[in-house]
Length: 222
Length: 307
Image (cartoon, rainbow over all chains, first blue to last red; front, side):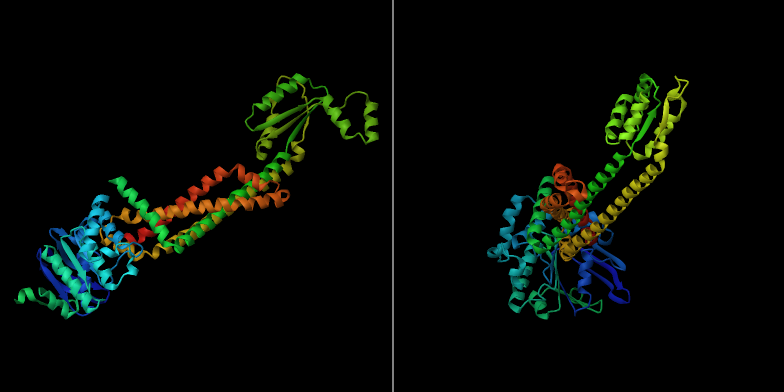
């Protein structure tokens, strides 16, 4: 599904990524681990075409991500759901509206929005919070809302960039369980983290990064 | 589909305006200031044009005819003058009327009246009073009268004198002052409007800068450029509409005060002028406000939309 081919990213003097090559199959759950600055976030940004590589190519299915035109970029991003460490919710919209916005963006009708949003809020246990604004919710609740937004349009891929970075162990466990459930339903998941506990509880393929390089990939070691 | 998208954009625009609270009202305030500057300029232009027109109205040219000039010739000259596009008005005063006016004017000046009586016959010729549409056109009108073809039918000139040549210097100088005042007024207007637009644009840019991250998030969630940009543009239009209403209302008491206190000084009642031109001024403000709001928002959001 995703193919990185000798990808490097250089910011002026610093090398963020160096010669990265790997592939992710459809339906896989891949955890990418490494310290801060290892290049995990840069890597996920490249899948979303937020950053262009200095060298190499990235494919999403048969689409060359870096050659996508602005108009098609919107189409590409609709196939990917993203969850961030800092949630990135729309602060002046309620929980309900945050999810509705993602549905409006892909052109869903009012009826579809009215029937799907309560359903997904229930799925992440936020049904009672639908009219609250993000700043009225706890960190765990905000992250669950972000996940609900990421999955509402049934994307083929979920990218979760340090989703548990700001959360306590209980909330971390909940988030990991939700992501595993999403993966069980057939969605490909890429999760980045520096938390060993998270990787152990996921217990799937792990790619370890250090200083912009892949130093271990459990898929090849197995 | 397109209608649903438009409805959502408008709804989101209103919602954003409401929820941004103080920031929205700060933007409205700045747009109000800009629109007030525009209104003030419109009113000042009215005062300027009124004063200039009054001065222009005082300028005219009189053609004095000889005492024996036949009336039909004068009338034919009058009608050919009236055909000129530059002419606003030509009024005829016969020699009898001229005498009557002269006696009226000098009724306390006994020696003059006595001298007039002594002559016995009417020494005054008829005259035509000519008003041009523009002060600058008197020269060409005077030239027209000098040219032979106007008076071709008669071998002897019936024109005694044209006072344009005596007043030429004054008329020309006045003309320079008037066109200078108009140019200066226009430049000042342009300058003030540009400054106001820049200030408004920067304020709206700052309000959108606050949403910079959210714009990025909306794009990541898969929203199209229009879906992101649209609500901000609607918000900009709302700034314009509310600011127009505030400005239009503010100028009611302001011009009423000017009308009461300053009519003698300005030469024109500001309140009457404002009320009689209210609709035009309101439309000008509304269009300026909305266009300013929409374009500023459009440009400001575009900066953060690229990826």
